[in-house]
Image 1 (tube, each protein chain N blue to C red):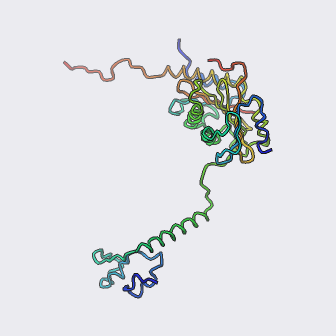
Image 2: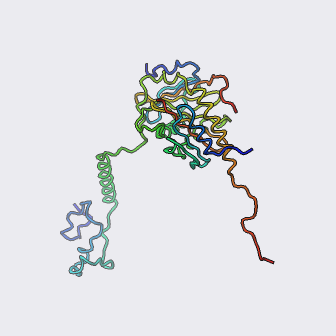
Image 3: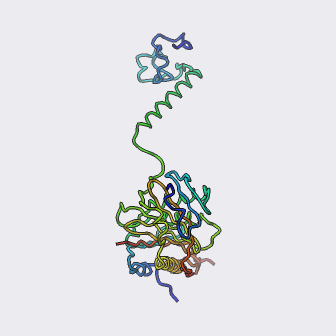
Amino acid sequence: MGCCFSNDEDKDDDLNDPSRPLINPISDGPSSRPIGSNVVDVAALETQGVDQTEYTDRATQYSHNLSSWCASTQKVRGPPRLPIGVATPHVVLSGQPISLSDIQLITSAAQQAARSLQEIKVRHKEDLVVPFGVP
Amino acid sequence: MMTQGIEQIPDSLGYLMLNEDGAVIASGGQLENGEKIANKLMHLIRIAIKMPTSDERASSFKKITVMWKTFMYVITFSNHRVFICKRQTNSPEPIAV
Amino acid sequence: MMEKSIEKLMDEIMTNPGVNGVVCTDAQGLVVAAQGVGRKSTGGQMTGVLDLARDLHPDVKDEPIVCIESDAGSLLLKSCDGITIGIHKTNS
């Protein structure tokens, strides 16, 4: 355990604890211990290098924790479910699709609406800014 | 029968049966191996099924029709499957332009 | 000749048998006028569905009609010159 950090202090024997912060302001700055809980002495900090192996191990563990947490949640993502639908799809598919009167209704409605909306298009008639009193 | 008889619809030009994810389970006629049109139709279906057709919130869904002058797609759902039939529009020139 | 106003047209459509809602949007999906069940419609969905329908066969020049049906009622959709009309019909 912790052979890479064999020169570290005894209390860091839980090096592989993934919840341990990468830097520890209090243990790294023993001289400032009384105020250590309030102040982070950045200059005195010495980062404990995370070697490649530990980095990979932690990444694996974090993603494992994340995926197990995601799996336990109820929320299902993805597209909405299909409607329950019908018992005999071929009967529905071979039936009368849209009645003739409905086709005529929607077609003439669309044409008339297009015509009446063309009427309310903005038409340029006169200048918006009228200069007056200008010689 | 797996396709529930949709290959025997009168005036049919082709058919598709998709699963809930839009993957083609069965196909025939003009829609044989119609992966591309299946994707487009699935996109349309996902919007259409969210649209309110009436005052009642939970009315059961029946079908979607996309109709042009000469042909149409009729779409319905059954048992977690999407059934699509491409049919001829053979009513006597219904759309006056 | 003065064309009839869009509101008057909506009133007229509402008098058709079975019609319980109507909605009209501009090309951007902005609702211009709505009555009855049509007030619940989302204009963007209407134009979106018709855009996707047109995209199924971009080579076909006539405007498709889309009809969405449930047991309780149906919604008919069609565009013309950039505007879109949706008509709700009840089955009861």
